[in-house]
Each structure stands twice: as C-alpha cells, then as structure tokens.
Length: 237
Image 1 (cartoon, helix red, strand yellow):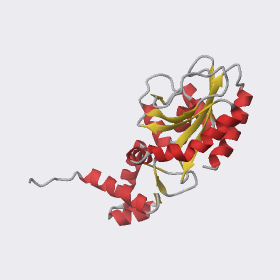
Image 2: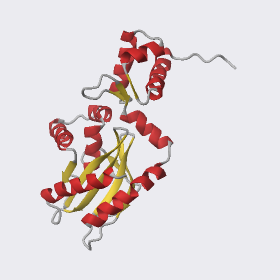
Image 3: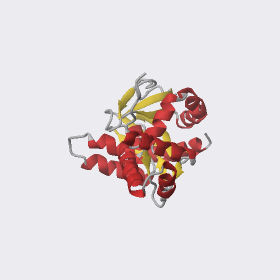
C-alpha cells in the first residue's frame, strides 16, 4: 500500500483535541503546547482556529481551553441519544404534569435543532403536533435561541452565514444569555408561545428543554414563572 502523507495542521489539531479530552475537557495553553510539542504561538493559532469553528472555547474568567459545543455534539451523535431521552424523560413528565403544556427535549444537530422527545399537553386546546424527530433552523425557535446563546462557537458559525440584518437576533441572543432562558412570543408560529431552558452536563450545554402552548393561555409572565419551574425539575436529572 502507498504511504499515507498526513496533513500536519490537521494532525496537530487532532492532537490538541485529544490532549484537552485527556485533561478532563479543559487545559491551559502552556500544557497543550508542551504535550503537543508545539511552540506556544503555533498552539495558540491552532486553538484560535478551533475556537472559531466551535471545537474549543474559553469561559469568562477561565484561562483554560474547553472542548466546545461542536465536538461535544459530534460525541453525542456518535453515542446513544436513547440514554439522553431516558435521563431527561422524568423531568419532561414532571414539567408537563405541573404546567399542563407540551414539554419537549431538543439537541443541536449540525446547524439545526433536532427534537428527541416530547410529552403532549393535557389541555383540549393544544399547541400543535408532537415534534419528535423534527429538524428545524436554530434561528427563531426558543430552543434554537438557547443553543445560539449558550454555545458560542455554534452561534458564531450559524450567524456568520446569514446575509440579512443581525441586529434583532443578536439582541435577543444577548437577552437569553442574561436571563438564562429563551422566550418565543409568536415568532416561530402565529398563536404559539414557547419558553426553553438549557440543560448542562459537565458545565456545557448539551440539550434544551422547552415548553409551548397557545398564546392566549401563556402570557409572558406565565412563561417566565414556568421557566423557573422547569429549571428546578431539570436540575434533578
């Protein structure tokens, strides 16, 4: 067989990701450079590129580089979504029982939202069809805004491809990051109000839990109250 010639930059980037993973998901530049046998400038430039692509990121007040949402998303896709469904199913059932509204679980899939699970509303007047298995754009929906707000690498990549004005959505993403949950007041679908919260594992956002119902039944204040209820239930997962 002919000898395979490795592309050096890809080989180095893969080594950096492996080093961060071996350090428990976060590592400092000095350690990464030493273990990868790279100069600090070279290692920093590679990390900057990986950051822009969403494969690593840095947290406020933390000098370490963490595995980013994009690499964690790949790990989830390669793993077992069934485990995530099972783990968060009790929280979904509790949220649906306490609110009477449809509760659902969504994850990032590439540059889209993918709905893994849902519990139907107990009300006669429902929000719409159960979304299990549905994929949709990140922009616009409450669960999508959660991922854009709390997975910086994903947000950078998705918004960089947009050609329209970014002002309104950037303002909304900032508001979501500040208050800790996302609201959708008839933006995604006329007559539908939604709220969504992040679910974290190891400090990283891995999924979003959402709730939706008719706008006439769910006022903005009611959605805000439900967000705190949802957070308490999800914390137990």
